[in-house]
Image 1 (cartoon, rainbow, N blue to C red):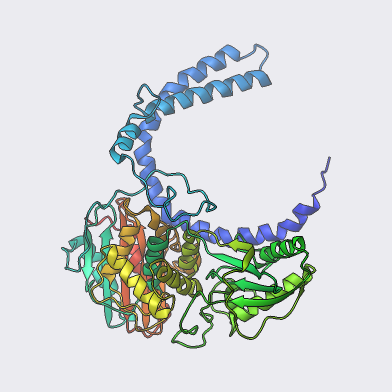
Image 2 (cartoon, one colour):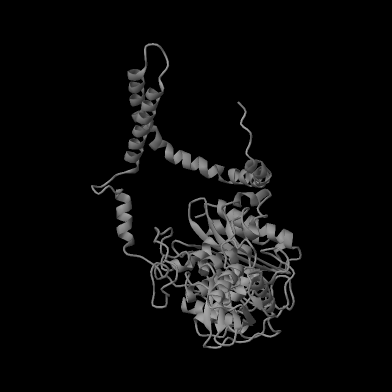
Length: 553
């Protein structure tokens, strides 16, 4: 009998084929990269598997002899019994091998480790005094992945350099394509020990690796669970409806919001609230007063960044893109208000066009509806993965707001520096002029970048973990999705996680990698003077891949 293919599957087939074609070469690269480690893992596991085979084999033989019918093959119930017996025997053997176990049913090793950890927790595992009751419930605590750095402090003094590691990295960092200057550092995240230092205290232009500092600052200042609200408020007795921006750079007006705050949802709820009040007509205005100072970045009009405002939808993009350079609105707040007015009209509310200039909402205005961004942890991850300049500048201002500063370019930069200082990070030589790294006057050291990454991996700062989880994965995600494809770079696929940085003549890479000995390392490579961005990026990728493959002691 031929079963006809469902129409849904027919429609989905082209998409599945394209997805398979896209993923296949990347999976092949991963297989090549992990093959040596898989072999080592197999060698380690084999001594435990061999005794299990000896335990299981006699049981299987006895069951087969007992159930074998005189006439030949096994019946279905008999096959089921054999399978169940084999499965239970394997499970028992595996459990025994994984032991020893104590009287409570917990593996002894796990109990001892849990006792050693004690009662640990972070700012994201409970409600603090500043947490609103309607805020989302905190995530349940998870077992720590990294060993705490303890009370270790970071200094800019040169540390002793691992000779073997220097022998690997020094020649790679002397590649002429990287330019005339570099600053490099490698730190063991578990111990905090400096393993490699090459002019690590020299301050160079960091480009987008600045976003690592912005991420640490905003998570430390506002917390990973903090959300940004966009509201529609009605001024009683006036019929004036004001759209109030809360500084959410991820607000979207698209039909598929993708989990981000939706302007369409806000319009739905606002229209419903107006109808409940028997209001059929409103005068629309908008309030973007949360942020202060110039909206334009010092680089001027640029496809990499829209004017920075507290009210914007889809980052002011005038095309259907969600990341990367794109044409931008010159006045995102006004355009967002006009879009909102159109959505209200579609929902039966007569709405006047908003004025050319923003208007501050009156204190007595009543909130009709609001939508919230995902938690800051998600915004940080999106910023780092896609190197999103719009999110970076908004989060710099949120850092200022959370610490009592001015939410502007200068105020955000000052707040980032102050917050990092409170964390005890090495700021000698560092200069911040924005949150995105687009400003060429920014200066960071490799020492500071590795200290930021190591702090984000510390058990003392679980609120900073999105800094690590948001880093692009080599060959797979974000700004590293199309890198690590050739030659010596390929061993870094799926292993290197790093934030990229690129300006004319400037190339940087900072992130984490697990080396051949299983150590989690934080690294930072800053370079200046490159004449060819493509070859410079490849040289940095080779350096990070070599670090991943090194078991240097």
